[in-house]
Image (tube, rainbow over all chains, first blue to last red; front, side, top):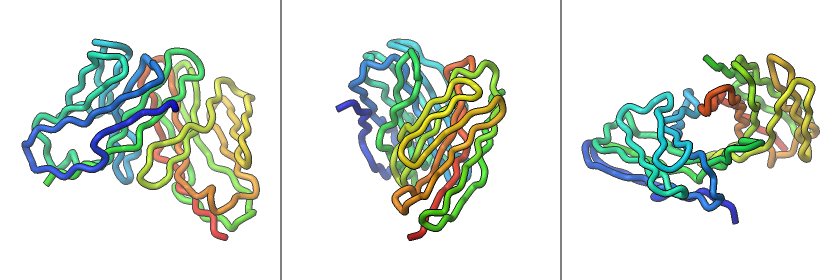
Length: 113
Length: 109
């Protein structure tokens, strides 16, 4: 089954404690992205990757890091989380040819206290 | 800068009451306009991609249309299970897609 998986699904942590949210896709997609979704603000892209070792900033990259060492994995790293990073996070992947639609993971709900 | 505006923000319908959701957009070099469905607490689920003005796509009770400035998602005879947030997004020259804030649809039995 084609899918994007994320772990963990729920996470409560404290300010400043480094964390990593993993993302993996089994569709051999070139493109992968991270989004955060907040009430009233919609989906905002944090970082994206066009292929292995190729990443770039999205609209809201501050406070986040990513890496793409393998085509299937695209972890999101918060080195020093702060309360304003409390949000619902989604990983997505898509191919480089039409129809370009994105496949989204199930989401990670992060709370930083 | 690409922009997407969805209206209305929220829509309440009775079962069987057809209606339309609007997505107005500005984009440089449209590579695709996308509609997604999102259930509470879940990831968006792809519905349609439209590429050029005049194009239409259908899936069950949903029909998406596209002009040069806007897209409509028509819902015919909706059922309670159609209740969800519907997201519109555009992709232009860059890889960064721009999403609208969505329309929250509630269909009452």
